[in-house]
Image 1 (cartoon, rainbow, N blue to C red):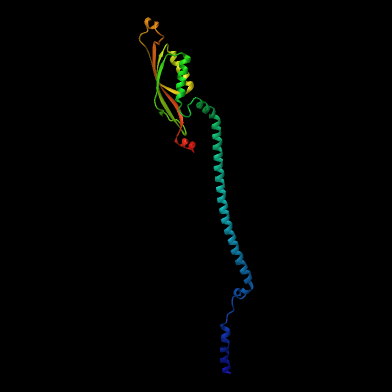
Image 2 (cartoon, rainbow, N blue to C red):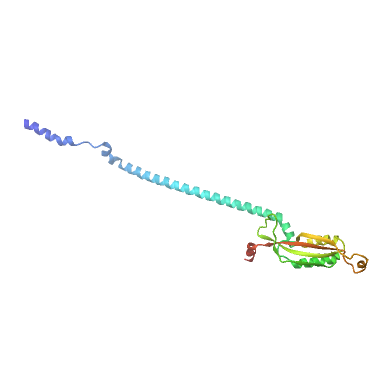
Length: 229
């Protein structure tokens, strides 16, 4: 009997060493398909969310670029409209200045011919003049000329006058053929105005010396190069 009692604990020892597995491990086989499905759906959802975020960021960048392009196009349009308005406003004046040979190349032959015609029409006494080579003309203030350059040609004129109005009429008529500034004019009475000289050929009893600057707006280097192309 004692031997049987001693063998009983030895036989029960292995049974006591075994422990039951947790239910979540024991029953994992039951929920395994659901867990795998959940994991797959989670990965797909994360991938979709990441792709949506990247696509949203790209869409916002494209939107900003589209807005920048629209704003740039609007600025170009407004600039073009402003230029068209300025052209409509200033074109008549520009055409008039071209007609008066202020804009464009210098035309000395027209000046020479104008002086001859004025002298014949006004019946002026013989006059002499000299035109210097054209040079850049500098003003005291700044003048916005764009792609053009203001240039001037210095001309000195000596006139014998019957009376002082001959000089003023000559300058008024000459302005119809160009744009110029009068730098200085001097008028003096000549000698020999007595009866002896009055009986001689008609001659002036006054003489004047004037210095003029013929002005022209000529195309600059960049504009001339663009026209050449």
